[in-house]
Length: 417
Image (cartoon, rainbow, N blue to C red; front, side):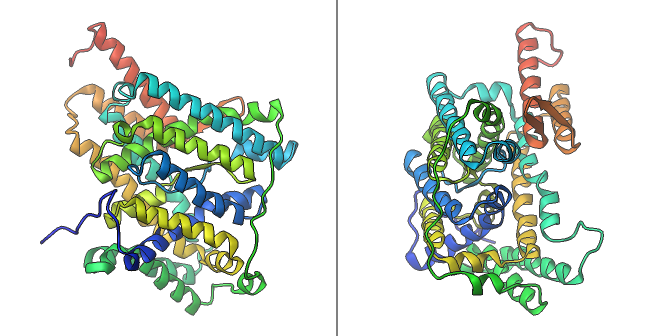
């Protein structure tokens, strides 16, 4: 049986194909991306605007060679909420800007010294489970969105969840031609229609929304205490970015850390956060949901990603459109997330397989075992205002183990050299 055709990063897509493919990407990121402004208590329109602008900036800075969609970063939720409660949202924006500036400086250091160190501190036996954890640690979020983890589970939520998930899974297997590359979009439509039939869609927000609305731009203020509270999040953001670039590299079968380079993608990510803070939006980051869409559809074109960014910008000015998308119920988002997060987890396992990791070597077995347990155990390590847990903590543990084994090798103390 012939494999599905891959649409590579630089390939252009006909307009009649690009529109639904771009809509698919926008829907994939929407649920998670608007959650951050809701937590911060701001209107999501400015966030949708910045997601689009940030994504276009990312494509431009990475010379159109790194497909990625930038959505709202969850890493800033805890410190950002603390700053907002104590000083106000304007001072949180100032902290976001400074974090972005320091992140750009880190990218300059990587440009100067290269990214070969990643192979030392995170060899395949460590990188595979770290990448897998990006998807696996979000599994509970997908189940929660679907309404499957509460004390009382509604049958209507289960029906909508299953309709969405089964459409996406079966569609990826049996759909042909153009429909084979938009199974996520078709699944969202099917899930939404089933949700309407089950009576769990609230059309109230659409009726109340105005046709056109200007995003609520605001401006930053700076305070040292607020900056110091937010700045340590850079460790989380940088680890997350490296993981996303590595998993995307495996999906598109190109080393994005070399070309366009980790320094370019990390700079683009942080530069977007700077711009975001200047206009009143939340920090941005590359999105796992959209990586999952690429893994499933085998459509990697930056033109499709750019189309999704343009749609996001347009939707930020159309109140009715934003309201319509916001009525997509949790079970639909949960059904899609189940598959997309799992795809990211599978990509981590693929790293282990493709790299032919030898588990006859004690170090490889120990690395993978400790990283998986660290990431899935729920352990939390606190350093001042920053908390390390899940994939980020596992990544730090993996780096420490990688460095330790490297030093032991140099000292000729290991028994499997």
